[in-house]
Structure formats: structure tokens, C-alpha cells
Image (cartoon, rainbow over all chains, first blue to last red; front, side, top):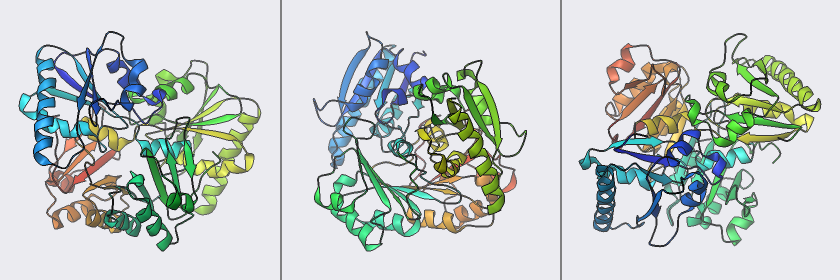
Length: 241
Length: 241
């Protein structure tokens, strides 16, 4: 374990066994584990996943990364978090920041790196299993094959622009955070005759996992935050699950 | 380890430590490891990665999955491979098929499942780290952040259609198999003024790893088969690597 290095560690989609050997080694060796929180005392799903791999005397530190659109608030808070980390590193501690899924796909960790630049700290990023690979594996279903392309879009409330572009241009579309606007999602699927070409999984890999292929459920029920939809315009191709 | 189950195991991008704990456990327990080959005696990069995790007395079997477009040849060969696997399973062996990266993204394994359906075998797919997550992690660079989308397209010789659609519609574009037509790739980048907005990595994580950000290299040199390009229209955002 090298001193003065800041590790960003992807802990995967939820199952502690879907952590890589490299990630486990780092979690088991560093002095400090940083757990990001959306707001104070919100808790950390990433920590629950990583917990069994972290050494018993590691220091666990929660840092808040508010999900706000106020540029000033973000810069102040994130700059403050970066300085906390930089101080630990300069004190000779080894530090790992844990992040759900993969660190390079919609992760708070990547925004933090921007604020760490001025401290000239060495950074090593350890990839993780993304939620969409986990979902498609648990369904025994390809995301893309042969010459197909695919696209990944986050769904924002009231905004169907990205979803439309994706559906217009790609055979396979993954929608992140579909719970943000299920009405828009259902409407685009119905408009295109794709009501039988999607699968939604919520809380994949947990005891509360639910697989939804009925468009009426999306329209009428509350979909959990931790959900992913895969839309396959050429047909679902699910091997028995 | 359950008898009568066929495992599809993603072994990740190249580094044996980027295999998951779950994948390692399965590789260390099954009776038979199936290594796919493009042609007879071509060898298997997936096997090189997995090797140290496979138990010493496991049976290693190479099956050929020719990369041809002849529908009949494919169906015969793949049907034959499926029957070989089905026979092993019915003889009570545990069998794992290893695949580079993630099994659900452009993997031969997924095509095979189609031919396995008639045998009514239970299948479990274990996700892996995809090449593009590995590449972006090794660069400390986000694939997508905030409200951005991204798309993944394979490049086929002489065909710029998918690449164009991706670049027209998404902030972030990952091109798989860019070596198939570097001329088309360079031309689309130059046309859009994106000649400083891409990074190409070949043989990521190996001793021969090479990082290319100069468009002239893409135009004038031979790019290896195992390469990935990430194009970021909003700027590269690489933390020191």
C-alpha cells in the first residue's frame, strides 16, 4: 500500500461478492475509508456493500456531497471535502473513497477529483461493476450484440429530450434513474410501440428485487430510486431467469 | 457449487485482480472451463487472465466460435458447441464459460445461450469489468457525469453511420474496435473539430499499454485490435495519469 495515494474504489452494484479482488485488497489495507453521503446522516449503501472487506481498525469518515444545483454551495462544500482529504494524505495516511457501481459513471468521486487537482495528490481509480451490467447479467440478457450500439441516459424530471434521442438512434437504451419521471418514460415507450420491449429491475440483487415488464406497473405504481431500465428495440432476448 | 448449472463468467479487461470475488470463487470450483476461440489454436486471452484463479485439476476445453457472417456455418458450429456443453452438464459436471470484459456486452457467450435454450439448462451470468470502465479508470476520467448521456458503438469497416449518430446525439461516445477503420474515425473527429477531445488506449493494463491523444497517430500508424476510444465533446477532464 503506497503512502500519499488517494484511491477511488468502485464497490459494484450491491452484492459484496461483486467487488473486484483489487478493490478488496485496497479496502482491507487503507487507513481511512471515505463514505459519501447525499446529506448528513443519510447513511451509505456503498459502505454496507464494502463493510465486510474493510479492516476492523480503519477510520470511517462520512463526507456530505449535497445534490444541489447551486454552483457556489457545491464549490464550497466540495472544496472543503477536498481539503479534508488532502490533509489526511499529507499526514501520511492512505485513503480510499468508496463509490457505488463504477467510479467513472455518474459518480460523485469524479467531481471531487476536480477539486483535488490543486493539491497534486496521486490518484488511482479502481473500476467497479456498473448497475446495468449487473442487471443484464442477472436476467441472462445481452445489452448489445453483433453490430448493435447502445446508449445510457439519465432521466430528468420533465425532460424527454435525451430519452428521445437515444430511442431514435440506438437499438438498445439504458435509462438511469427512471423513477424521476415514469410518466415520460411510459409515454415514449407506448408512442413507439415498445411496451413489450423493456425490462425494469429495482433493487437488483437484494431481497427486495423486483422485475417489471408490464407497462401498467410503470404508469400506476411507485418505482424505487434504485431502478434501471433496459429497452431493446429488437426484442428482449432474455434467457430464463 | 450447484450441479447442472452453466456459468458465464466475465473475467474483466486484462488484470487478473480485476476479476470479482464471485467470479474467482466459481473459477476455483467448477469441473470444466470453456475457453472460446476465434479459430482453432488461436488461444484465449480470457484464459490468460483467469488462469491463476482456476483450480489445478479443472478440465480446460477450447471451443471455436468463428467470427463469420455465414448464417448456416454459425448455426451449425454454435449448435454443436451448445450440445457439447449440454452433454457435460447432463453428466453432472459444473461448467463455466469465460469471457473477456462483461458477458452482456458484445460477448460470444450471449449468442451461445440462444442455442442452449432447447436443453433447458439453468444459467447464471456473472458480470465483469468492461473494457471502457477500465480505460476511463486508468485515466482517472469520467465517462459521464451530471445529466450527460453516453453511447457505445462498434466501428465496422467502411460504415460511419453509427459513429455519426452517436457523435450527433451524445456528449460522450465510446468506440469499440476502432482499429477496424481509423480513417473514418479520424475523419469524423476532424470534421467536428474534436481532434483534441478523444483519448485512445490500446492494450490497457498490459506492459504494452499506449495512450494516444494525437490525431496524426490515428491517421498514420497501425492501431492494435485491443483498443478503445473515448470521445468527450465537452472536454477530456483527465486527472493526472
